Image (cartoon, rainbow, N blue to C red; front, side):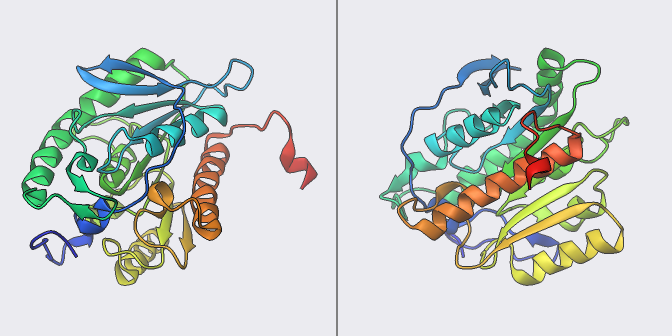
Length: 279
């Protein structure tokens, strides 16, 4: 599946990012958020309008494309739904798309596995402190937090829904991931908050067998979750689809809509337009 050999150890449930994670389409649009530095890391902040703000915060964990147009626009759309959205650049300005020759091919001399090992090591060490700094800057005593991660970002979602080793409650109240990578059994076994899984039926990192096992673990442990499953699309569908293909566009939009609506329900966010009452 990958560039070179990828780990196939039994403990992986969602495999590390591979060549499938380098493919995809770059969308067009003008992001509306702002960039600032939090804990010495570039951070993208998408703000809701004053009349639409619901008082909740979404923490965004990017895929290997980092701060590219598609991801920034996704954060903007979440802000349109009333959330303050804060995203981390744990790739430090060195995302994977800088190493592509066209939409599907990596540069011939690019060592993907070395890049991945370096970025993973840094993100693992940087994320917890950055999350604490985000909450200190943007949170109040009663602020509720959601988190969302794509591909590379999935384990940080699960970690954010689990009590830290130092003790205390999980950093976030609810989380979601789409087409995940880098997940092991403990990520599901240790969950303490609701999880939304947005998945492709065909995914080289998160196979049908692994997905079913994850759902079985959540179900048997009576952990709150929701599985959203799309046929006809593959890994990356929720961020890097071909928008000129109506079904791919719908899957991307349905994934985002499902994630936001799940957050609304789990966080007790009320729709100011009372749309639900008209269904």
